Image (cartoon, rainbow, N blue to C red; front, side, top):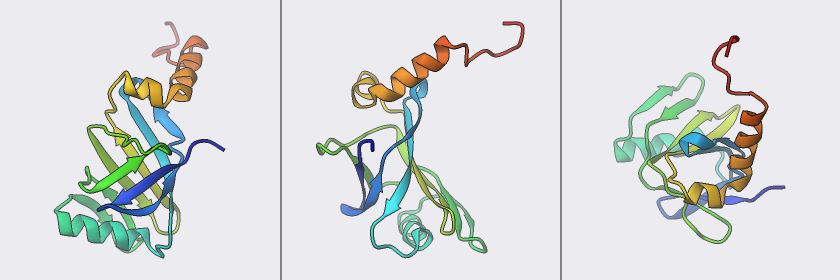
Length: 136
C-alpha cells in the first residue's frame, strides 16, 4: 500500500487518503477519502461549505456535492508536512464516495513528495502518451 495522508477539517481528523491520482505537470494530486466515523460525507461537507460561504454545485436528491476551494481543509503527509497548493476541493456522492483534489502544488516540493507521480508521468510521456494529433 502507498502512503496514507491525513485529511483534517477545521483542525479535526476526518479521514485519510492515498492521493493515488495525479496530473504531475499541473502540480495536482487527487485521492479517495476514507472517512473516519462520519456516516455522511454529504452532510459533513455541505455543513462546512454553508458555514464558510463556499460555493458548491449541490444535488441534494442524490446527495452529491462539487465544491470550490474549501478553507479549513488540510492534508498532511505521514511525517506531518502539510500538502499546500493553490486550493483544495472535495467532490462526490454519499453512495459512491468522496474525492479530494489539491491543485497547484509548487515544484520542487511536488517532485520531492510525489516522485512516483512524476516518474509515472515521465514514463507515459516517453511512450508517446501525450500526442495531440494522429499526425504528430
